[in-house]
Every structure is written in structure tokens, then in C-alpha cells.
Image 1 (cartoon, rainbow, N blue to C red):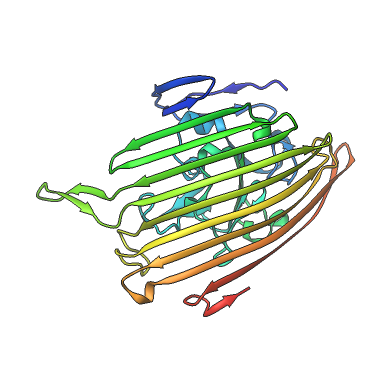
Image 2 (image 1 turned 120 degrees about the vertical axis):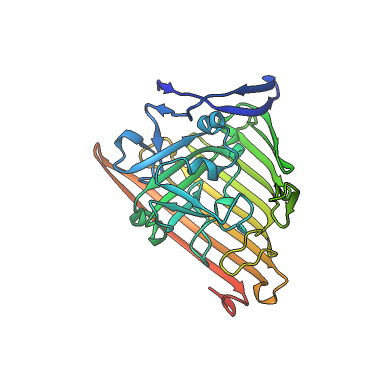
Length: 365
């Protein structure tokens, strides 16, 4: 398929790719990237691969090339550039106790998917922008603006954001390292490695670290002051294994780990300026796709999402230990009925168990 790509680039990064090149590139431009690809396929609007030009939905796509060209520091920054998408926090990154809400056209009922798997918390129905996969693991992001409840349920009334991560089987063997630094001891590190073995086993792994120390500022007298409790630290690991079985079938295993902590130096909604939080996400999924390249494709996936949050405070009423654990199964089969008619059938079942003595007086399901 021939593709035509028009772009303007903004890039400030350090990139090292083994076996290809080693060095740094520094390019400045006044305008952000605009990338248009003819013949682009999307899956979020109809749950099957469809040419974007034939999709009767308002859907935007952020490619891995656009992420690199714009040098986005995280996925939240990338999606916030799409008109109608807003990320609401209580201040700068890392200062909102990990509760940055994602809104589409002003509606916070937004379903977040990672490779088609729902990750929204059962307790709130939301998913923080701080917990999205690192940019070095993302193949593309599809943003469906407008109600998607017919295909995804009532938590998709505002829209759907589907983050599709990279596969080792679709990459040439490589190792990529990314590093950045800035004010207030800000540091960002990322490393990815991917490729495929001779027997068709694709391996992709990424690790990232993002941290910042406390803010410093000058007061009215010109003296340098430090803002306590304003730093944050985030570590993440993503692993994906995919094995082709026969001509057109594939099994995929995926593991996501995120560990983050930070404070709330500004205070909000009853949270004091001395409160802190720690969060741990461990998500695991197994998926089997059949007849991938045909009109009668289908898949089955089983997954478990585990979220553990601790809220620490000198005020005992603000302390909390919170576990949100979800397991689910998805099954889908599509049928090509005629040239202009397709039938998509499926079932999605998930169950969440919550454990929080403060919010729910114990356990809920």
C-alpha cells in the first residue's frame, strides 16, 4: 500500500539505536507536527480494522512518528493536543496524587483501552492520565470522540481512547535508549528492545523512569525557596510476547507494571499540602487471535488488572489503603455478509473487587 505522509517536525531528544546510528539530534520548528496518512486503518470505531476514510465516526490517530517528531514526554501530553480532549489535574505533573482526569468534549465518562483491553477503575469508572503506557512503548493512539456506548458500554459515553502498544514481531531487532533532563532535577529515561526469533516469537520490552525533585522559586524578597512535597517518581515496565501459530493465528501475552509516588503541594478537595500517595499497577493479559488477515477474524482475551493505592497523611482521616482488582474476558467474531455488510458479535464480562475501609466500609464487588 502506497502511503503519502506530510509532516513538520519538532524534536529535542537524545536517541541511541544500536546497529543503526549513535548521536543526538536537535531540531526546532515553530509549528507542531501534522501528519496525514492515506489508507490508514483504525480499529476503535467499529472494533475491527477499517479504513479511516470509511469510518462514520470522529476519530483521531496519533502515530509513533508523531510522538517522536513532537518529542512528547508522555501519552497525556500527546492526547491533550487533540481538539476536544482535556487532561485535568490540580497542578503540574506529579502533583495531583495520580488523579488527572481525561475528558472528551467536557465529558469525563471516557473509556481507556490498552490494546483493546479496558483498564478503567471499577471504583470511579475513570483512569488517570498519569498511568498511561510510556511513549516509547506506544505504536499509535486512537481517540474516538463521541458516544461509544453501543460497542463498549456506558462508561464510553464521552468517547474512547485506545492505546495500541508495539509488537516485537512487527519490528526489526533493535535497542533504543532515550534520556532527557531539566530543571528541579527532572530526569526521564527510557529503553526499549524488540524483535522476532526465527520461529516467529515476537518480543518487545520497555522500561522507563520519570522523576522530578521539589520545585524551587524566588519569594518577594528574591530569596530562593523550596516547595515541599512537590516532587514525584514513576517507574514502569512493559513486556509483550506474541507468537504466530500457523498462517493466520496469533497468541499474545502482555504484562504492565507501574509504580508511582508523589505529593499534593497545592492541596485540593480536602487533601492537605502534606499528603502523599503511592500507587502500584500490575496488569496481565492473554489473547488469541484467529484469521487475522481475513474478513472473518476474531479473538478471545482474558485479563486481570490490579491497582493498589496508599494515601499517606498526618491527618488520620485522610489515610487510606485501597485495592481495585478486575478480571475479565472478551470474545469477538466478525462475519463478512456481503460487500457492504458486516456482522460483529461478541461478549464482554468483567468483575471488580474493591477493598477500602474508608470509602466502602470494607469490600465491594
